[in-house]
Image 1 (cartoon, rainbow, N blue to C red):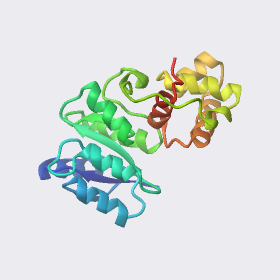
Image 2: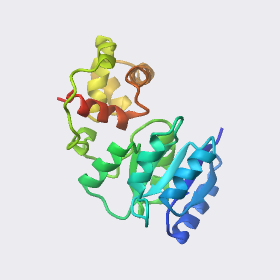
Image 3: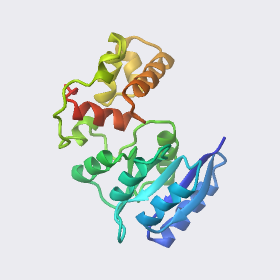
Image 4: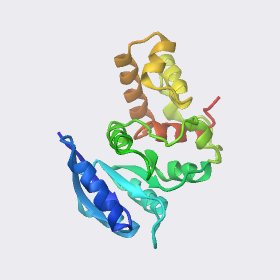
Length: 214
């Protein structure tokens, strides 16, 4: 089954280039493209089945971060992979807080962009740099008490939760927790469902907001 992708960028040439790259992949399908944040929000409201949106950060009118916030608040929202020509911790933190599942530079190699689309579609966080997710999410207010959702996690799930928040991959968690990678993946899926997070990025945001980071 193909991963259905939409591209949002005010530069027609960039959209055309991304469309060309996606068109070469048998497991990816470009279903729509638009040039503004306003059109992106309208697109998601009117089009079902979009899996991943490639969203430019800087656009006239409604910017990418504001559009992402509006889109991810919608029921059954697609995952959003932010694209930009620059990166800094503040922008990444804003994108994460808006609900983005990934962040990639626009001058990245085609192979990296395609890998990022697949990873985000699979629920894995993608960041342009290697800094821990918790560090990039700093600045998000942490004022609420331990939430009831966290209390539903078993001891094993809480261990995996802490490793995910620390930025470890499934394979790395499997190594340190002496579990199979399949078992870790199962734990992560259950944790996401219990706390109501769409993916790892949102799980980190949940942890930061509730003071659950080390």
